[in-house]
Image 1 (tube, rainbow, N blue to C red):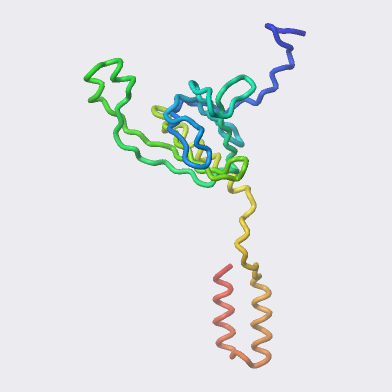
Image 2 (cartoon, rainbow, N blue to C red; image 1 turned 30 degrees about the vertical axis):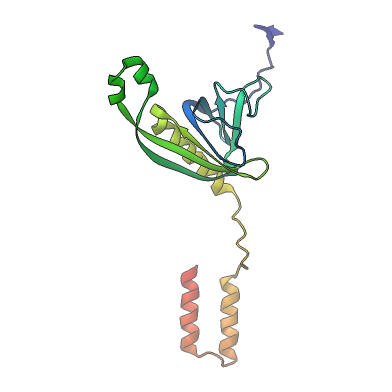
Length: 195
């Protein structure tokens, strides 16, 4: 059955938790084709963020609908920072108010996201959420921490040593007379503190 020009069951696209307007400030990394200072919408999902640039059409990933889009899964994010960018003059205020608009400055806090793209190349982007900073940044922070707390710990290359194994080694050293009773107790206490 068609409803308003499309099939009733056709709308299976995942809905974001929320989306915000942001100024996409740019990118550092191997992909230099991305524009600088673009208006965008940042869609926040449970497993990723999607940045849809509003003006750009050239030199960037285009969706099937012809939109410029950057998708960053939280699991690919390596670092999330909020940088105080100081007082900024908004061009919109200057256009609206003229010269007095130059005096009206806003405090800018920029969200900097470092991540690895699909080719495992490190990338860095910056977003200015403007008036939505106090809402968007904590939400992205929380989702980033949730996903990274569920990821398995990275292998440090050092062997895992169990306390039980160490205690049995201490007992053998004591039996062989290599360490004294006092030394054994001190080492045992230090092992127990590591637990």
